[in-house]
Structures are given as C-alpha cells and as structure tokens.
Amino acid sequence: MSEFEFKGTIYTDLADSLRSQGFEAGAEAGNVVFTSMPDFTVEDMKAAAFDTRHSNPKTIPVKLHRLGTVQVAITTLRLTFQERDDEEVTGYYETPNWYLEGWIVDGTSTHHDQRVRAYVYSDGPNETVMVEEVEAQVIPERPHPTAHIRYARESR
Image (cartoon, rainbow, N blue to C red; front, side, top):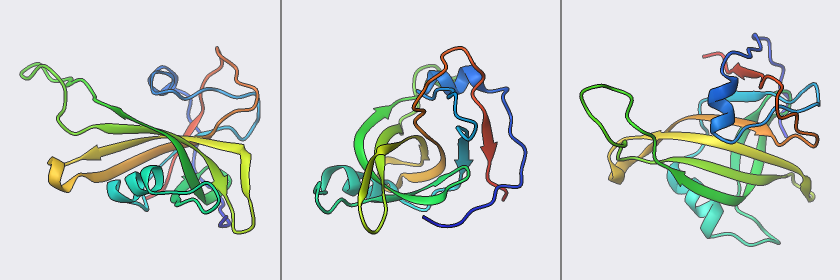
C-alpha cells in the first residue's frame, strides 16, 4: 500500500446517490467514499475479474481515503446501465458503468477481511471504453444504515 495523506474536505451531501450505488455509511471514523481518477483500464478490470487465480490474483489499483493506492483482487463485477437524465433523449446510456467488490492484496498475503467496493464510471464507444472516474471505499465492518455517507474527492 502506498502512503497517502488526504488534505481536502469531507462532504456528506451525496448520501442518497452513493447509497443507491451500493455504498454504506460505517461506524468506523475512516469510512469515507473516495472519488479519484483511475489508474486502470476497462480491460485491466475485466482481466482482474475473469483471468485470475485465487493463489495468484490479478489486481487493479484502487485509491482509498487514508490508505492511498491499494491492489484489489475482484470477487464481484457487475454492469450497471445508467438512465439518461436529459429531457430530449430517453432510455439508457450505451456504455455501462461497473460495480465491483474485492479484497485488498499486499505483497505478502491476501486480506480477505479488508474488503473494498467501487463504482467505476466509464464512457466512450464500446470499442474504446475509457474509465473516467472511480468511487471507492473499504466496506464497513459495522454498517450504519441511516447515517450520512461521507465522501471526499482527489485533488486534480
């Protein structure tokens, strides 16, 4: 895991949106959804999900609040098609976004107890889909269903 010091503001005003994407508030103080630019491609994500082994997992780098960049072995990967929100076009965007879960892998062992969830925004025509943004958090050990979900953004 890389060293990381977050110096930005922590917000709570997107709790409903984040909850609808699968995020949860946690009783733990450091449980924050962190939004960042990706360090992986859609192809990297697919390879980590479908071309991997338990004893030697393929991973993707995910940035987390307080932990910095960690390597995540994917255990769940789900497509999510987002509804269009403009008045002139109805239906769904053609390019899917992705919801994933996995465990943190460091160089010496796998930490099945440290699980991560992420929502990956992608865009572009299907042949050249690009990952635009990633929202990620450590899955809370003690979820708090009615608390505000806290989030922070990577400085750009």
